[in-house]
Length: 350
Ligand code: MRU
Image (cartoon, rainbow, N blue to C red; front, side):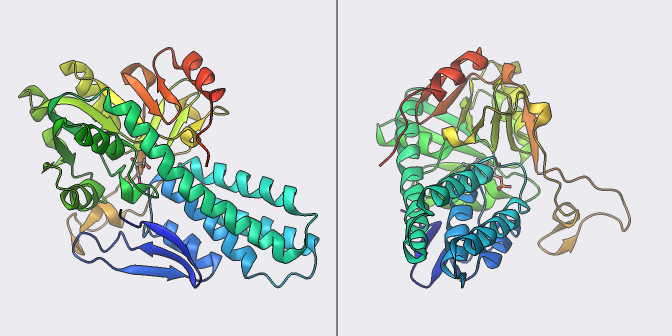
């Protein structure tokens, strides 16, 4: 399995996704500041991977701490969590991971400092293992929705690279292929950062799953030609009413799917569901550097001084979403009710 990120004795090790698909190189972070940087710079990306990275960054920062007592250690924890909060605002898994590590700290704070440190390291490692287990469970649920054969379109990268392994949307595809379904993936290239062209194509080719890369503006034509039987994407945050924030361009794909009568599925762990955000209009959308739009491969593509927008995500209203696949089961409209039901369902834990 692809090792997107892992805890090692010398630090947290990441497959450098900015170098893929041409170079497979790794970066090891030895401080929490470096971990925050690799999130910001997209060495590691994808909502579930960001969540576990944050947990490992917190564990690393606490491990390195020279605090002499628990209240000093708590102050450092707060400082580290603040640094993590400022990295990327849309993926709610980031905030979920901070809360989980803070809770763990509170329960462990009566113990000696070396034990508190060890508890946080183990919690981050548990979150890593749980993420893979959740993806495999999601895959089993979602595979039932995939066609027996034919084209399945995906946008961005919601694969092993966006998680600790196996993937969410690509986990659903992997599970369907493992069950013998003959799926051909259409991967939107995903301008401006090209996660589809660089990452989805790379990891599916490694697995021998037939894949065709298309530029984003080809998706409608592929649907019209009958090449696409289903669409499956990931999510960065799902509001309580089922509105879905995901990579910019997802909304366009969902609207096109509706026009062509193609089912549009979202696969995400329950940690991506944000029951405290009532609807998509309240989801903060990250704005990234204009250079991602103005330049391709270091070459300028637009005239000097032109205005540029670069929202990293958009929101797909729940009315376009056929079903939401989680490790706890499949939710369908009305999502206000089905997500509440899943919130009370049994949790995948190790
Ligand atoms: O900007 P990115 O690459 O972090 O955006 C990733 C996505 O939009 C994914 O689809 C989403 O995080 C789900 S990953 C399982």
